Amino acid sequence: MFVKTETRKPTLDKNKVLKEKPIYRFFKRMQDIFYSVFALIVLAVPMLILAIIIYIDSPGASPIFKQKRVGLNNREFTLYKFRTMIPGAEDKLQELLKQNEMDGPVFKIDNDPRITRVGHFIRKCGLDELMQLFNVLKGDMSIVGPRPPLPREVEQYDEYDSQRLYVKPGLTCYWQIQPQRNNIVFNEWVDMDIKYIKDRGFLTDWKIIFKTVKVVIMCEGM
Image (tube, rainbow, N blue to C red; front, side, top):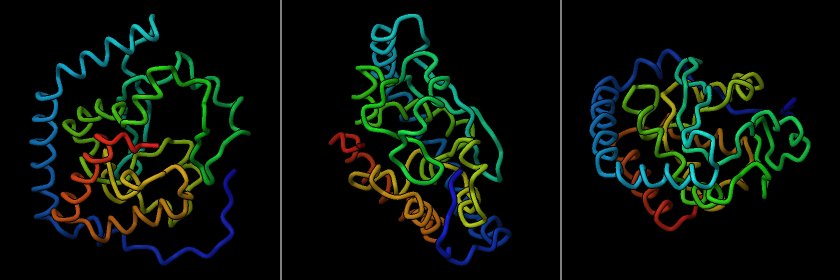
């Protein structure tokens, strides 16, 4: 169990966060629909090729991975990703928990034995997240917003951490565009998400989107 010992910063007013910036929220949804549809059309062939490569690398398993995540207002939804791990990888998680190299409720280790050969490259370039464009189109997620956590992670959240769920989760945010982001401690990650909630606006979103494109092109995702 993740236990925090330091004093956290003051929490946000949830009702204020949910009600503020109504014009921004409306046009952000229109922007999400436009960007996701445009990206899915442009990337349709590359995504199909990627799915075929994943299937060849790991035959017998669907190239699409589905997982329960937690979004706005603690609502669970099904998140889509390109498969980067062997079939049954989640069943092997318990065996690896003691090797966790991330602090907080998040799990990640270098050289995770469950990741496939193709999966290493896909993760490094962030290509596994492309399927989440369908989540954006459905309205579960936004292009920009805090990354959606797993239910088991949310169970360990305190009041401060739970503020990440005050807005829709996103494909990318401040944490996603940091160099060597996996070296960032969980508390700093949450602070970045709270900063985004405070800063959110079209200019902030566009800056993050442009930086994300650079991260993907340069394969700086590890």
